[in-house]
Image (cartoon, rainbow, N blue to C red; front, top):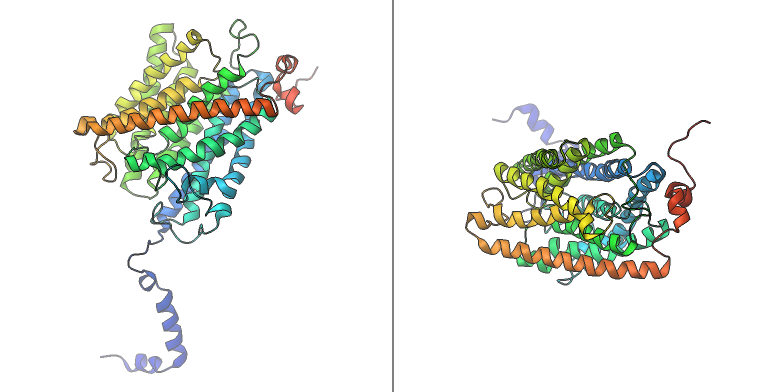
Length: 446
Protein backbone atom coordinates (compact mmCIF):
# COMPACT_ATOMS: atom_id res chain seq x y z
CA UNK A 1 0.00 0.00 0.00
CA UNK A 2 1.37 3.46 -0.97
CA UNK A 3 1.92 5.69 2.10
CA UNK A 4 -0.36 8.72 2.44
CA UNK A 5 2.64 11.14 2.26
CA UNK A 6 3.71 9.69 -1.07
CA UNK A 7 0.19 9.91 -2.48
CA UNK A 8 0.03 13.59 -1.52
CA UNK A 9 3.37 14.33 -3.19
CA UNK A 10 2.27 12.53 -6.36
CA UNK A 11 -0.75 14.89 -6.59
CA UNK A 12 1.63 17.89 -6.60
CA UNK A 13 2.16 19.04 -10.24
CA UNK A 14 5.67 20.36 -9.50
CA UNK A 15 6.75 17.01 -8.10
CA UNK A 16 5.23 15.20 -11.05
CA UNK A 17 7.11 17.46 -13.50
CA UNK A 18 10.46 16.89 -11.79
CA UNK A 19 9.89 13.14 -11.69
CA UNK A 20 9.06 13.11 -15.40
CA UNK A 21 12.25 15.03 -16.27
CA UNK A 22 14.37 12.67 -14.21
CA UNK A 23 12.79 9.71 -15.95
CA UNK A 24 13.49 11.17 -19.38
CA UNK A 25 17.21 11.68 -18.72
CA UNK A 26 17.81 8.42 -16.86
CA UNK A 27 20.18 5.90 -18.49
CA UNK A 28 17.46 3.31 -18.81
CA UNK A 29 15.20 5.55 -20.84
CA UNK A 30 18.12 6.87 -22.91
CA UNK A 31 19.00 3.43 -24.24
CA UNK A 32 17.46 2.83 -27.65
CA UNK A 33 17.46 -0.69 -29.10
CA UNK A 34 19.67 -1.02 -32.19
CA UNK A 35 21.63 2.17 -31.49
CA UNK A 36 25.28 2.15 -30.34
CA UNK A 37 25.57 3.02 -26.66
CA UNK A 38 28.15 5.45 -25.31
CA UNK A 39 30.39 3.83 -22.71
CA UNK A 40 32.34 6.08 -20.36
CA UNK A 41 35.02 3.51 -19.47
CA UNK A 42 35.72 2.68 -23.12
CA UNK A 43 35.91 6.37 -23.99
CA UNK A 44 38.27 7.13 -21.10
CA UNK A 45 40.54 4.25 -22.11
CA UNK A 46 40.61 5.37 -25.76
CA UNK A 47 41.43 8.98 -24.90
CA UNK A 48 44.18 7.82 -22.55
CA UNK A 49 45.49 5.57 -25.31
CA UNK A 50 45.50 8.50 -27.74
CA UNK A 51 47.62 10.47 -25.28
CA UNK A 52 49.99 7.50 -24.91
CA UNK A 53 50.41 7.26 -28.69
CA UNK A 54 51.12 11.00 -28.87
CA UNK A 55 53.75 10.45 -26.18
CA UNK A 56 55.37 7.91 -28.48
CA UNK A 57 56.14 10.70 -30.97
CA UNK A 58 56.85 13.54 -28.56
CA UNK A 59 58.93 13.01 -26.58
CA UNK A 60 59.45 9.25 -27.18
CA UNK A 61 60.56 8.97 -30.81
CA UNK A 62 62.09 12.44 -30.76
CA UNK A 63 64.42 11.44 -27.91
CA UNK A 64 65.07 7.97 -29.33
CA UNK A 65 66.22 9.40 -32.66
CA UNK A 66 67.73 12.57 -31.19
CA UNK A 67 70.18 10.66 -29.04
CA UNK A 68 71.45 8.59 -31.95
CA UNK A 69 72.49 11.48 -34.21
CA UNK A 70 75.59 13.61 -33.81
CA UNK A 71 75.48 16.61 -31.49
CA UNK A 72 75.27 19.12 -34.35
CA UNK A 73 72.03 17.59 -35.62
CA UNK A 74 70.06 16.81 -32.47
CA UNK A 75 67.73 19.84 -32.59
CA UNK A 76 66.85 19.30 -36.24
CA UNK A 77 65.98 15.69 -35.42
CA UNK A 78 63.80 16.70 -32.48
CA UNK A 79 62.16 19.37 -34.63
CA UNK A 80 61.09 16.90 -37.30
CA UNK A 81 59.05 14.83 -34.85
CA UNK A 82 57.69 17.87 -33.04
CA UNK A 83 56.51 19.80 -36.09
CA UNK A 84 54.85 16.73 -37.61
CA UNK A 85 52.44 16.63 -34.67
CA UNK A 86 51.14 20.04 -35.70
CA UNK A 87 51.18 19.48 -39.46
CA UNK A 88 49.57 16.05 -39.55
CA UNK A 89 46.94 16.91 -36.93
CA UNK A 90 45.66 19.82 -39.02
CA UNK A 91 45.78 17.80 -42.24
CA UNK A 92 43.92 14.98 -40.50
CA UNK A 93 41.05 17.21 -39.38
CA UNK A 94 40.76 19.10 -42.67
CA UNK A 95 40.66 16.09 -45.00
CA UNK A 96 43.05 13.28 -43.97
CA UNK A 97 40.63 11.46 -41.68
CA UNK A 98 37.96 11.56 -44.36
CA UNK A 99 40.30 10.14 -47.00
CA UNK A 100 41.34 7.35 -44.63
CA UNK A 101 38.06 6.33 -43.00
CA UNK A 102 35.01 7.86 -44.68
CA UNK A 103 32.94 5.51 -46.84
CA UNK A 104 34.04 5.84 -50.43
CA UNK A 105 35.63 3.43 -52.88
CA UNK A 106 37.84 0.41 -52.29
CA UNK A 107 40.89 2.67 -52.74
CA UNK A 108 40.16 5.88 -50.81
CA UNK A 109 37.51 7.49 -48.66
CA UNK A 110 35.27 10.28 -49.88
CA UNK A 111 35.52 13.85 -48.56
CA UNK A 112 32.17 13.64 -46.76
CA UNK A 113 33.90 14.00 -43.37
CA UNK A 114 36.21 16.87 -44.38
CA UNK A 115 36.57 19.38 -41.56
CA UNK A 116 35.01 16.71 -39.31
CA UNK A 117 31.60 17.38 -40.85
CA UNK A 118 29.26 14.79 -39.36
CA UNK A 119 31.94 13.43 -37.00
CA UNK A 120 30.16 13.61 -33.65
CA UNK A 121 31.84 14.32 -30.31
CA UNK A 122 28.95 12.64 -28.50
CA UNK A 123 27.67 9.79 -30.65
CA UNK A 124 29.53 6.64 -31.79
CA UNK A 125 29.92 5.64 -35.43
CA UNK A 126 29.07 1.93 -35.15
CA UNK A 127 31.20 0.74 -38.09
CA UNK A 128 34.37 1.83 -36.26
CA UNK A 129 33.59 2.62 -32.63
CA UNK A 130 30.49 1.02 -31.18
CA UNK A 131 30.82 2.46 -27.67
CA UNK A 132 32.96 5.60 -28.00
CA UNK A 133 32.19 8.95 -29.68
CA UNK A 134 33.20 9.21 -33.31
CA UNK A 135 35.60 12.07 -32.54
CA UNK A 136 37.35 9.95 -29.91
CA UNK A 137 38.07 7.35 -32.59
CA UNK A 138 39.16 10.11 -34.97
CA UNK A 139 41.67 11.68 -32.58
CA UNK A 140 43.03 8.27 -31.63
CA UNK A 141 43.68 7.47 -35.28
CA UNK A 142 45.20 10.94 -35.70
CA UNK A 143 48.04 9.92 -33.39
CA UNK A 144 48.82 6.94 -35.63
CA UNK A 145 48.96 9.28 -38.61
CA UNK A 146 51.31 11.59 -36.68
CA UNK A 147 53.92 9.01 -35.78
CA UNK A 148 54.12 7.22 -39.15
CA UNK A 149 55.95 9.91 -41.19
CA UNK A 150 58.01 10.71 -38.08
CA UNK A 151 59.42 7.17 -38.25
CA UNK A 152 60.75 7.86 -41.76
CA UNK A 153 62.93 10.71 -40.53
CA UNK A 154 65.41 8.31 -38.97
CA UNK A 155 66.55 7.14 -42.40
CA UNK A 156 67.35 10.62 -43.74
CA UNK A 157 68.67 12.14 -40.51
CA UNK A 158 71.47 14.69 -40.69
CA UNK A 159 71.15 15.63 -44.37
CA UNK A 160 67.59 16.41 -45.56
CA UNK A 161 66.57 20.06 -45.86
CA UNK A 162 63.74 21.28 -43.66
CA UNK A 163 61.82 22.57 -46.70
CA UNK A 164 62.15 19.24 -48.43
CA UNK A 165 61.12 17.42 -45.29
CA UNK A 166 57.96 19.53 -44.90
CA UNK A 167 56.83 19.20 -48.52
CA UNK A 168 57.51 15.47 -48.69
CA UNK A 169 55.78 14.80 -45.36
CA UNK A 170 52.59 16.59 -46.39
CA UNK A 171 52.50 14.82 -49.75
CA UNK A 172 53.29 11.44 -48.20
CA UNK A 173 50.69 11.52 -45.44
CA UNK A 174 48.02 12.55 -47.97
CA UNK A 175 48.87 10.32 -50.91
CA UNK A 176 50.42 7.27 -49.24
CA UNK A 177 49.31 6.94 -45.62
CA UNK A 178 45.68 8.00 -45.98
CA UNK A 179 44.86 5.68 -48.90
CA UNK A 180 46.74 2.76 -47.33
CA UNK A 181 44.88 3.25 -44.04
CA UNK A 182 41.65 3.13 -46.02
CA UNK A 183 42.72 -0.08 -47.78
CA UNK A 184 43.45 -1.86 -44.52
CA UNK A 185 41.07 -0.32 -41.95
CA UNK A 186 38.34 1.42 -43.95
CA UNK A 187 35.00 -0.39 -43.96
CA UNK A 188 35.10 -0.66 -47.76
CA UNK A 189 38.90 -0.84 -48.23
CA UNK A 190 39.96 -3.66 -50.53
CA UNK A 191 42.54 -5.21 -48.16
CA UNK A 192 40.03 -5.03 -45.32
CA UNK A 193 37.39 -6.70 -47.47
CA UNK A 194 39.91 -9.39 -48.41
CA UNK A 195 40.16 -10.33 -44.73
CA UNK A 196 43.70 -9.20 -43.87
CA UNK A 197 44.40 -8.83 -40.15
CA UNK A 198 46.30 -5.77 -38.92
CA UNK A 199 45.30 -5.00 -35.36
CA UNK A 200 47.33 -1.84 -34.80
CA UNK A 201 49.37 -0.95 -37.88
CA UNK A 202 51.89 -3.51 -39.10
CA UNK A 203 51.18 -2.65 -42.73
CA UNK A 204 49.71 0.84 -42.36
CA UNK A 205 52.36 2.21 -40.00
CA UNK A 206 55.51 0.10 -39.96
CA UNK A 207 55.80 -1.42 -43.43
CA UNK A 208 54.71 1.82 -45.08
CA UNK A 209 57.19 3.96 -43.12
CA UNK A 210 60.03 1.43 -43.30
CA UNK A 211 59.75 1.04 -47.06
CA UNK A 212 59.37 4.80 -47.55
CA UNK A 213 62.52 5.19 -45.44
CA UNK A 214 64.38 2.90 -47.84
CA UNK A 215 63.21 4.98 -50.81
CA UNK A 216 64.24 8.19 -49.04
CA UNK A 217 67.68 6.86 -48.09
CA UNK A 218 68.29 5.88 -51.72
CA UNK A 219 67.03 9.18 -53.13
CA UNK A 220 68.70 11.55 -50.66
CA UNK A 221 71.98 9.63 -50.65
CA UNK A 222 74.57 8.89 -47.99
CA UNK A 223 75.67 11.28 -45.30
CA UNK A 224 78.83 13.20 -46.02
CA UNK A 225 81.74 10.97 -44.98
CA UNK A 226 79.65 7.79 -44.51
CA UNK A 227 80.85 5.11 -43.87
CA UNK A 228 84.50 6.17 -43.60
CA UNK A 229 84.04 8.69 -40.79
CA UNK A 230 82.82 7.59 -37.33
CA UNK A 231 79.25 8.75 -36.67
CA UNK A 232 78.60 7.62 -33.13
CA UNK A 233 75.40 8.49 -31.21
CA UNK A 234 75.99 11.65 -29.20
CA UNK A 235 73.73 10.79 -26.22
CA UNK A 236 72.63 7.21 -25.61
CA UNK A 237 71.04 8.23 -22.32
CA UNK A 238 68.55 10.23 -24.38
CA UNK A 239 67.99 7.29 -26.72
CA UNK A 240 67.27 4.80 -23.93
CA UNK A 241 64.90 7.27 -22.30
CA UNK A 242 63.08 7.59 -25.62
CA UNK A 243 62.94 3.81 -25.98
CA UNK A 244 61.37 3.54 -22.53
CA UNK A 245 58.72 6.09 -23.45
CA UNK A 246 58.04 4.21 -26.68
CA UNK A 247 57.59 0.96 -24.76
CA UNK A 248 55.09 2.53 -22.35
CA UNK A 249 53.28 4.41 -25.09
CA UNK A 250 52.98 1.28 -27.20
CA UNK A 251 50.38 -0.09 -24.79
CA UNK A 252 48.12 2.71 -26.02
CA UNK A 253 49.10 1.86 -29.58
CA UNK A 254 48.22 -1.83 -29.34
CA UNK A 255 45.92 -2.36 -26.35
CA UNK A 256 44.10 0.85 -27.23
CA UNK A 257 43.25 -0.61 -30.64
CA UNK A 258 40.67 -2.79 -28.94
CA UNK A 259 38.68 0.48 -28.71
CA UNK A 260 37.24 -0.75 -25.42
CA UNK A 261 38.29 -1.44 -21.84
CA UNK A 262 37.77 -5.17 -22.11
CA UNK A 263 39.48 -8.55 -22.19
CA UNK A 264 40.84 -7.99 -25.69
CA UNK A 265 42.68 -4.90 -24.45
CA UNK A 266 44.18 -7.01 -21.65
CA UNK A 267 45.27 -9.71 -24.12
CA UNK A 268 46.85 -7.15 -26.47
CA UNK A 269 48.60 -5.45 -23.54
CA UNK A 270 50.15 -8.74 -22.41
CA UNK A 271 51.16 -9.75 -25.93
CA UNK A 272 52.77 -6.35 -26.52
CA UNK A 273 54.87 -6.54 -23.37
CA UNK A 274 56.00 -10.11 -24.02
CA UNK A 275 56.91 -9.40 -27.63
CA UNK A 276 59.10 -6.46 -26.64
CA UNK A 277 60.75 -8.38 -23.81
CA UNK A 278 61.61 -11.39 -25.95
CA UNK A 279 63.02 -9.27 -28.77
CA UNK A 280 65.21 -7.22 -26.43
CA UNK A 281 66.78 -10.45 -25.16
CA UNK A 282 67.36 -12.07 -28.57
CA UNK A 283 68.84 -8.86 -30.05
CA UNK A 284 71.28 -8.58 -27.13
CA UNK A 285 72.10 -12.28 -27.32
CA UNK A 286 72.79 -12.06 -31.06
CA UNK A 287 75.09 -9.06 -30.80
CA UNK A 288 76.83 -10.54 -27.75
CA UNK A 289 77.52 -13.72 -29.70
CA UNK A 290 78.57 -11.99 -32.93
CA UNK A 291 80.16 -8.79 -31.64
CA UNK A 292 81.42 -9.96 -28.26
CA UNK A 293 79.62 -7.30 -26.17
CA UNK A 294 75.98 -6.70 -25.21
CA UNK A 295 75.11 -3.03 -25.77
CA UNK A 296 72.53 -0.74 -24.23
CA UNK A 297 71.62 0.54 -27.70
CA UNK A 298 71.07 -3.07 -28.74
CA UNK A 299 68.67 -3.68 -25.87
CA UNK A 300 66.71 -0.55 -26.71
CA UNK A 301 66.63 -1.33 -30.43
CA UNK A 302 65.60 -4.92 -29.76
CA UNK A 303 62.67 -3.84 -27.61
CA UNK A 304 61.46 -1.50 -30.36
CA UNK A 305 61.84 -4.27 -32.95
CA UNK A 306 59.68 -6.55 -30.82
CA UNK A 307 57.06 -3.85 -30.41
CA UNK A 308 56.98 -3.35 -34.17
CA UNK A 309 56.61 -7.06 -34.90
CA UNK A 310 53.89 -7.74 -32.35
CA UNK A 311 51.80 -4.73 -33.44
CA UNK A 312 49.72 -6.35 -36.22
CA UNK A 313 49.31 -9.57 -34.23
CA UNK A 314 48.74 -8.14 -30.75
CA UNK A 315 44.97 -8.46 -30.85
CA UNK A 316 44.93 -11.94 -32.39
CA UNK A 317 47.58 -14.03 -30.60
CA UNK A 318 48.09 -15.44 -27.12
CA UNK A 319 51.10 -15.08 -24.79
CA UNK A 320 53.29 -17.92 -26.12
CA UNK A 321 52.94 -16.92 -29.81
CA UNK A 322 53.73 -13.35 -28.75
CA UNK A 323 56.99 -14.56 -27.19
CA UNK A 324 57.87 -16.43 -30.40
CA UNK A 325 57.08 -13.44 -32.62
CA UNK A 326 59.20 -11.16 -30.44
CA UNK A 327 62.10 -13.61 -30.16
CA UNK A 328 62.32 -14.01 -33.93
CA UNK A 329 62.00 -10.25 -34.44
CA UNK A 330 64.99 -9.44 -32.23
CA UNK A 331 67.41 -11.71 -34.08
CA UNK A 332 65.91 -10.98 -37.50
CA UNK A 333 65.98 -7.20 -37.20
CA UNK A 334 69.50 -7.24 -35.76
CA UNK A 335 70.66 -9.23 -38.78
CA UNK A 336 68.81 -6.88 -41.16
CA UNK A 337 70.50 -3.82 -39.64
CA UNK A 338 73.91 -5.43 -40.09
CA UNK A 339 73.15 -6.08 -43.76
CA UNK A 340 72.65 -2.44 -44.82
CA UNK A 341 76.35 -1.88 -45.45
CA UNK A 342 76.34 -4.77 -47.91
CA UNK A 343 73.57 -3.14 -49.91
CA UNK A 344 75.25 0.26 -49.83
CA UNK A 345 72.45 2.51 -48.54
CA UNK A 346 72.70 4.85 -45.57
CA UNK A 347 69.72 4.23 -43.30
CA UNK A 348 71.08 6.45 -40.54
CA UNK A 349 68.97 5.17 -37.63
CA UNK A 350 67.99 1.69 -38.88
CA UNK A 351 64.38 2.42 -39.82
CA UNK A 352 64.44 -0.16 -42.63
CA UNK A 353 65.95 -2.93 -40.52
CA UNK A 354 63.58 -2.38 -37.60
CA UNK A 355 60.30 -1.09 -39.04
CA UNK A 356 60.21 -2.56 -42.54
CA UNK A 357 61.67 -5.95 -41.66
CA UNK A 358 59.93 -6.12 -38.27
CA UNK A 359 56.62 -5.03 -39.78
CA UNK A 360 56.82 -7.62 -42.56
CA UNK A 361 57.62 -10.40 -40.11
CA UNK A 362 54.81 -9.32 -37.79
CA UNK A 363 52.22 -9.21 -40.57
CA UNK A 364 53.21 -12.66 -41.82
CA UNK A 365 53.40 -14.04 -38.28
CA UNK A 366 49.81 -12.91 -37.78
CA UNK A 367 48.89 -15.28 -40.60
CA UNK A 368 50.67 -18.05 -38.71
CA UNK A 369 49.56 -17.55 -35.10
CA UNK A 370 46.19 -15.74 -35.18
CA UNK A 371 43.40 -17.51 -33.34
CA UNK A 372 39.68 -16.84 -33.02
CA UNK A 373 39.98 -18.07 -29.43
CA UNK A 374 41.81 -14.82 -28.72
CA UNK A 375 39.65 -12.59 -30.91
CA UNK A 376 36.42 -13.91 -32.37
CA UNK A 377 36.35 -11.00 -34.83
CA UNK A 378 39.64 -12.18 -36.38
CA UNK A 379 40.51 -15.46 -38.06
CA UNK A 380 42.59 -18.55 -37.47
CA UNK A 381 46.10 -18.62 -38.92
CA UNK A 382 48.07 -21.40 -40.57
CA UNK A 383 48.98 -23.11 -37.29
CA UNK A 384 45.30 -23.22 -36.35
CA UNK A 385 44.12 -24.84 -39.57
CA UNK A 386 43.65 -21.88 -41.94
CA UNK A 387 46.48 -21.64 -44.51
CA UNK A 388 44.52 -19.09 -46.56
CA UNK A 389 45.11 -16.44 -43.89
CA UNK A 390 48.86 -16.55 -44.50
CA UNK A 391 48.24 -15.96 -48.21
CA UNK A 392 45.97 -13.01 -47.42
CA UNK A 393 48.60 -11.54 -45.09
CA UNK A 394 51.31 -11.97 -47.73
CA UNK A 395 49.13 -10.22 -50.31
CA UNK A 396 48.64 -7.27 -47.95
CA UNK A 397 52.39 -7.12 -47.31
CA UNK A 398 53.30 -7.11 -51.01
CA UNK A 399 50.69 -4.47 -51.80
CA UNK A 400 51.90 -2.25 -48.96
CA UNK A 401 55.54 -2.57 -50.01
CA UNK A 402 54.85 -1.82 -53.68
CA UNK A 403 52.54 1.11 -52.99
CA UNK A 404 54.80 2.73 -50.41
CA UNK A 405 58.05 2.30 -52.34
CA UNK A 406 56.83 3.38 -55.77
CA UNK A 407 54.67 6.17 -54.40
CA UNK A 408 57.43 7.46 -52.11
CA UNK A 409 59.98 7.51 -54.93
CA UNK A 410 57.61 9.58 -57.06
CA UNK A 411 56.90 12.00 -54.23
CA UNK A 412 60.60 12.35 -53.43
CA UNK A 413 61.31 13.26 -57.06
CA UNK A 414 58.48 15.80 -57.04
CA UNK A 415 59.77 17.30 -53.80
CA UNK A 416 63.30 17.50 -55.16
CA UNK A 417 62.04 19.33 -58.24
CA UNK A 418 59.99 21.77 -56.14
CA UNK A 419 62.28 22.71 -53.23
CA UNK A 420 65.19 20.26 -53.19
CA UNK A 421 65.74 17.33 -50.87
CA UNK A 422 69.22 17.77 -49.48
CA UNK A 423 71.17 20.57 -47.86
CA UNK A 424 74.42 21.69 -49.48
CA UNK A 425 77.70 20.15 -48.34
CA UNK A 426 78.69 23.18 -46.27
CA UNK A 427 75.43 23.13 -44.34
CA UNK A 428 75.74 19.41 -43.70
CA UNK A 429 79.26 19.83 -42.44
CA UNK A 430 78.26 22.60 -40.02
CA UNK A 431 75.22 20.64 -38.91
CA UNK A 432 71.51 21.10 -39.53
CA UNK A 433 70.91 22.70 -36.13
CA UNK A 434 72.83 25.81 -37.15
CA UNK A 435 72.36 25.74 -40.92
CA UNK A 436 68.60 25.07 -40.90
CA UNK A 437 67.45 26.49 -37.55
CA UNK A 438 70.24 28.80 -36.31
CA UNK A 439 70.28 27.12 -32.92
CA UNK A 440 72.61 24.92 -30.93
CA UNK A 441 71.46 22.12 -28.64
CA UNK A 442 74.18 22.68 -26.07
CA UNK A 443 75.78 25.93 -24.96
CA UNK A 444 79.39 25.78 -23.78
CA UNK A 445 81.15 28.68 -22.11
CA UNK A 446 84.55 29.63 -23.50
